[in-house]
Image 1 (cartoon, rainbow, N blue to C red):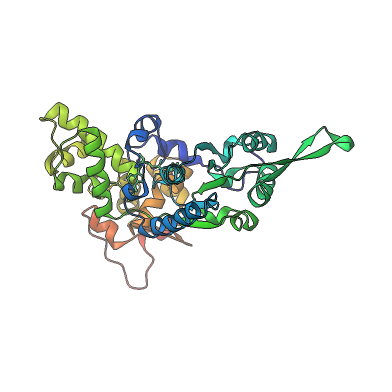
Image 2 (cartoon, rainbow, N blue to C red):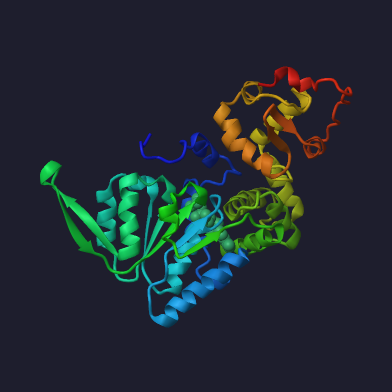
Amino acid sequence: MNPYETEPAHHGADEDGHRLVGSVADGEDTAVEAALRPKELDEFIGQEKVRAQLDLVLKAARARGATADHVLLSGAPGLGKTTLSMIIAAEMEAPIRITSGPAIQHAGDLAAILSSLQEGEVLFLDEIHRMSRPAEEMLYMAMEDFRVDVIVGKGPGATAIPLELPPFTLVGATTRAGLLPPPLRDRFGFTGHMEFYGPAELERVVHRSARLLDVGIDTEGAAEIAGRSRGTPRIANRLLRRVRDYAQVKADGAVDREIAAAALAVYEVDDRGLDRLDRSVLEALLKLFGGGPVGLSTLSVAVGEERETVEEVAEPFLVREGLLARTPRGRVATPAAWAHLGLTPPRQVPGGPGQGDLFAG
Ligand SMILES: Nc1ncnc2c1ncn2[C@@H]1O[C@H](COP(=O)(O)OP(=O)(O)OP(=O)(O)O)[C@@H](O)[C@H]1O
């Protein structure tokens, strides 16, 4: 692990990338996403607040003939941070360079990138919170003074050679703005928080992508996919591609509610966007432990998964959906979880311990 990493390693990230409902990009996403990215701010669906704020920042910079202020975008994977950074560059009619925090291990790596930027260029730094500390410190000066000190030599003979940089716009992306050290956060002129998308917005994403992929889809078919997309355009686009396959093989290629539901049933994505892993966690919690509380380790053994997989891959969405709660005594199912799986909660003995209490800890 990188000694400078400011966040625990993403045990779950690789696994998440292999799920149909994972929000991290997989190989196929990378290949297809370029074609599906909105190219202008007006084309970008949802995120009204961020869009309106960014629109002002960019228009003002353009009117002044200046380079736009540095922009920080925070939000979960797949919500459109890369897409927005490309839109920023397009709106500023500037070229864009794309890199990521983990790719910059040494300050020298960053110096090489910064010193080759053109005037006005947009530098997109994904996962900026995972950059090494020395690179981060170099970035402070570059952002503020458009200057870096390049250290030449080692030990007592080392000298710092100042290097002027052309003005550029840094667009940093992070899953959690709170992970950034305050001096770095403070150097951004504008921070946009990306929210999960609502069903109506996701429907628009599905319709737009279907048009670009030349897939016939009706309103109900799009709604069916949107409702299972976990608030995330990347997942909506991925589900659409799988539904398209199904429609081509099993029907005439057109997508309606029935086709979408049947296709996603094949892939075990239920009407709320839960997949096999999510449901097996919920089922174990409800059927084996009476809804909890049950400790994470016990729950993970029961599901046959690693602790990290349950905690980092399955739970965040279950918590967000209000199906599972993390309490000091262990994991607890909510009434919505019982309802979602069509099960009836056991009757609690007044004052007595819940069945799952036996397993808590
Ligand atoms: N507002 C939107 N309107 C239409 N499509 C969108 C929107 N936001 C994202 N998408 C689509 O979702 C996909 C993923 O978006 P993007 O790569 O920008 O996400 P991201 O937040 O940068 O993810 P990561 O953090 O993993 O890099 C792209 O194909 C993009 O076209």
